[in-house]
Length: 90
Image (cartoon, rainbow, N blue to C red; front, side, top):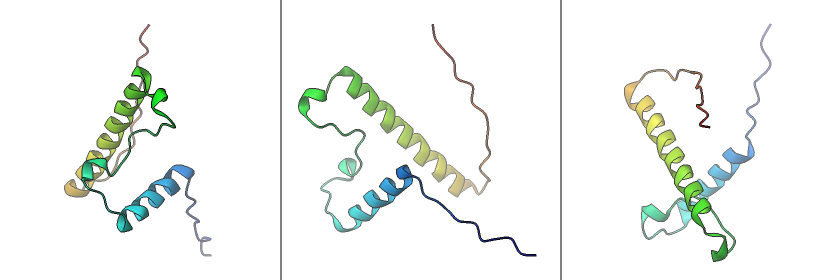
């Protein structure tokens, strides 16, 4: 008996990533540094220390993910799931 075909559902984050990637194929970007946004604000008044910290955190997360995926592709090894314990600073 054959297994039913598995359906791959995309979540909102993946859909937005694919839309952005698609837009970059027909848009001109003067410098690749500005191709991806770290955070989006509605006005200049929203920019403060917390917003900048969040943007830096988002960028670090994106870079870490990209480098991890590149290491997997270059190294030819399988991705392993590991549990991460978070430290809570009091």
